[in-house]
Length: 275
Image 1 (tube, rainbow, N blue to C red):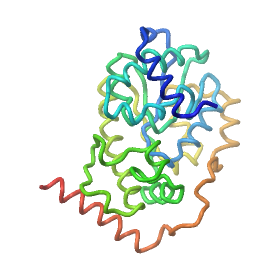
Image 2 (image 1 turned 60 degrees about the horizontal axis):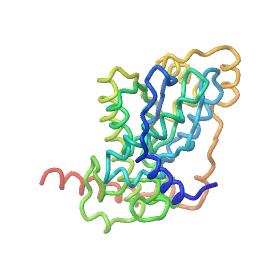
Image 3 (image 1 turned 90 degrees about the vertical axis):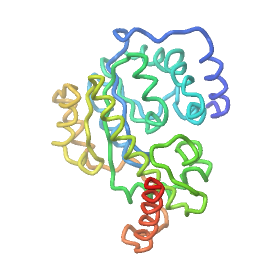
């Protein structure tokens, strides 16, 4: 497998080559996810994977993370990535629906896809805020601080929706909690933006997707047909854990210290917004 650095250099080179995005009619119907990492995107992918007529991907090549940091400083690079690399790859899909659940999509790649005129739908996937923040922290994915946090997540020095001044003073957990708030702001923003383009927007959570009736509702809202074999495969999966990386030592969800840390983050954000 190519290293991230090699992929990045290859994508940068390809993005500068002459190439245009396929016409919208040459693409399958596109469904992306606006969510935070550690929010159940792997489970959503597993659900899509069991549906006939859907090409389900989680973090496929060409991967968003290879250029995620670059597009924060050069937004036009994301458009070139879509035109020369990502959409040509997706155009080869043989299924009528392409569903990708990568949480990197909402980190610099949404507006450029809209600007290209390629229609798409989104699933706004939620999870309890503290559950996400604890999972990020316990997984070593600290935004702006750890290696994983810098590779896959945003940090407050970038162009963000939720400004967080003097963030280097904060604890690892507080940075993870801030990232959840940042993602929720992006979910609201992109839900409105995609709706205005005529795209479908479906709001759900990993907790409610443990009910087959909610899975049916989401698919119906996305206008994805569900036949009997697909429904049987879904019934075998619904409620099953597909990502086990949360099972490491760390604070419990009821730890009073987390209340204080979260409140300090909220107060800092509120004070800055009011100043």
